[in-house]
Amino acid sequence: MGKRVIIIGAAGRDFHNFNTFFRDNKDYEVVAFTAAQIPDIDGRKYPGELAGNLYPDGIPIFSEDELPKLIKEMKVGIAVFSYSDISYNKVMSTSAIVNAAGAAFMLLGPNDTMIKSNKPVIAVCATRTGCGKSQTSRRIIEHLMEKGLKVVAVRHPMPYGDLTKQKVQRFANLSDLEKHHCTIEEMEEYEPHVVRGNVIYSGVDYGAILKEAENDPDGCDVILWDGGNNDFPFFKPDLMVTVADPHRPGHELSYYPGEVNLRMADVVVINKIDSANGDDIETVRRNIRKVNPKAQIVDGASPIKSDHPELIEGKRVLVIEDGPTLTHGEMKIGAGTVAAQKYGAAEIVDPRPYATGKLKKTFEQYPDIGILLPAMGYGKEQINDLEKTISATPCDTVIIGTPIDLSRIVKIKQPTARVHYDLQEIGYPALKDILEGFQFSKNH
Image (cartoon, rainbow, N blue to C red; front, side):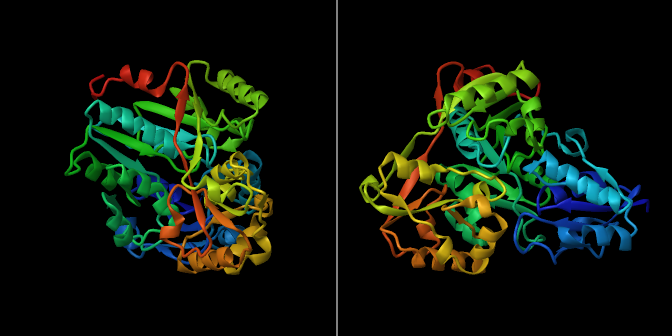
């Protein structure tokens, strides 16, 4: 075997990079993965059943904190950066750590890792976590279904459990979420597709997943790649849609690999223009034109509505937002916050004095979250800590700004007001106009 490699990851892109580039490649020897971003995913092994003939004993996964020591002790020649939604400063700081320990620093590209499908592929990606990929995906699926097409969605990986069992996962109804022991983060991505009647796949081995999706028992005319964070697609797209967020102007040119998505895009959706500052919208539009003048730009809004606005008006509210959007997505405002403002909440209650266990550590790790509560639920312990924190926070109403009804998973004693939001295109072109010109055949 050849050069010794560590793959720096977060239980997603890292496994895909291994499977597509390193698994059967005798020019390299992968000696370890490191893990970051997601709590409690280090200390495992990438199992031999998935690692292939060159790695019958599997590959250990360590904390990224140990990276310099691992490089020296394992005599590593190359460290491959393999996770997403990272500032350019952080990427190059990691490169400095790797180089100082004596190893080379590598970034694999789309041509190294994208898998070709025998079906048309539409990819939905973003410049940052929390831009609105899921609602954009749902909107595209609605338009495709109107054409009578069978759409199979494939979601960017979130394999936080038993990796062997998670090799290929198919979700066709809500019971499948329980069958696969999904975390809150997974349910937030899968459930909206399932309740709309779409099949969605995810897992670990995306070569195997693609074969299953292409031959889904319910039929498949189009693959919809539903991206994660701001990662670029695992499948080679025939149409690439990238979502940008004017609440974080400039981030589209300063976060990895979001700028890759921006430059690759056929279509860029500027989302949330109903709640963003006009100057910030123009900054994003100008940056799109600077790096990708050929892309079609779709203006989009995310109008907010609540099932119980009367429980928000004049009330002291606890606002719960999507976890990753607040943590490594660095968002300062989410759907729940917009709802609190729109419906006239008297006060947003600060949950930090009442945070317990792992949630308390989350606030310590991400101090800029502020007075919003991230719906962290990567395991039973975190879900219990979330439940305790909500219960202890003195408020009149809990605003649920997550993509799923959190009260179905977590017991909430206070009255709840759930927030709903969908993509609304404004003006021309709309996504429907663009899809009209898309040829749904691999012969195009």
